[in-house]
Image: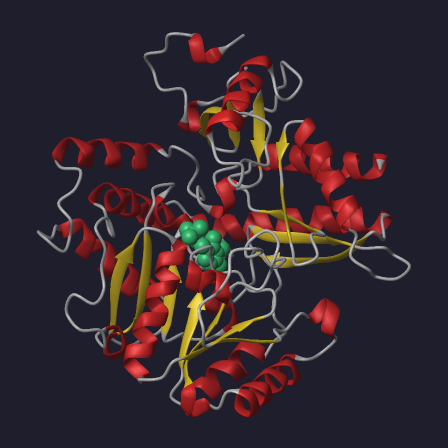
Length: 452
Ligand SMILES: *Cc1c(COP(=O)(O)O)cnc(C)c1O
């Protein structure tokens, strides 16, 4: 059966897709295999893919491939389609805006939806102070602009990022990103004035939050000097680095030090933002109020949009014309963001993320009881990870991790790996997934682990 060839009038994406796992071919099926063969001829080799299927529709907690296979989605396109893929409110808002105008460039002739998104971000981000926002196209672009703003505000140049940090693939954000392969190797030279210090990684460093913060702060003071430092940037829960939740007190102490020293504290919430962690923003779990917050991924239900939001006086440091871009805050992306924010706020997605987190954590702990190769289970809300280790030594087991992921994928479950040591399976299901489908996905992973 090749659904791609079937004439359809009704849309087959969105929540109307049957919420089941069903394989009708091996993966990839013949139609996917044919397109993937063309991909390898036509698309640059550096643009890799992890699932051996070609998508034709997606919605709720499933993805439909070109051969009619229905897969359980535990990745949300890397934490993007949190509201559910092709959410009807998003699809409708996109279609309506596309019929009105598709682009003017906000820097040429502004439109209201951009202002609406800015107001929503100013309202939703933590911190009870006057805020402003600027919109961009991608997470990396938001991070680059947050650094530009912090430098202009402070008149200083240095930036501190952390071990295990991930901030993107552009030149400045490669410099901020910790991991060489695959993100940086061979792509230098990197932007100057970027310094790296240890982060809090409770499972591996054995330090309390205040101890880990003191270590980082001492290095900053001795090796850089607060007077030279424009900004400290960190993901409140590190994403690509392994879903590392810092020990209590770590972020709080780093924020307090930044405040005492006139350093801009930037929370990169590109992955953790928008209900993902069971709070609208992960900073809330730690009681911190960042000076600037970068957002993207979950912001617009799959449309490319990103933002920098923060203290009005800092955001206003850049001169007129110093920020922007041709497409930043595109009207279709803004319409999708407003629809998505409506869903986050009015369809209980923060609460749903917490429920999903409880389900994931309790099932993973059951599996861990019987299998010491799961060294650590951590995360918040619908951002949960399992770290795989050699039980005898605690050494990272990347081979086992990729074998589990590969086996689950072959059974029709989309799982993603991450971690500095490649030994973490991360769960980022759409918040629209049902309990049954989520449970089935975990059963497949448990069986795959048992068989290895
Ligand atoms: C994905 C990600 C980025 C980069 O976002 P892009 O949209 O891929 O440029 C930056 N920071 C974090 C924390 C991310 O997870």
